[in-house]
Image (cartoon, rainbow, N blue to C red; front, side, top):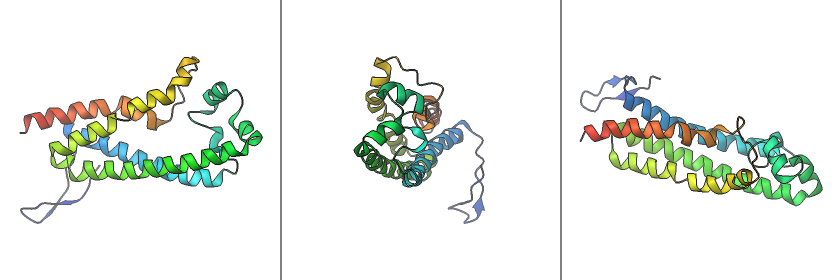
Length: 180
């Protein structure tokens, strides 16, 4: 990934190398921000296009797991109770806005702070990114208690902080620890 940037000393435009472990960590943090922005945009568009408020047949996680948890296919549940569809549309519009704003902040903190090796940006990203995990325990709790299998179809937004952000945090911290 090549991105133009201006060198402050010589005022010439240089391309970053993006070939170190630290650059990989920055790329992973940027990826999480971009994914949140995309999910925010997707939720805005998909819920406007879904007349019943259930795009892709999903209430929360995926069609199969939601059907098991709620006892019927999400589309049929919403058809029987239109208020549920309205609640879902309102809730996900709100969540989509949160995903969008979080993603933009993630991108800005990573690009303007972490990329410049600012420790405050690193710690802000780590605390903010991992602070979602206890809330996901609450979301996934009813599925777990009923032994409903979520894999292999779990949205990437749920997997990214668990699978890719820990290595990103370790790689970035190793560089920051040695630089100052």
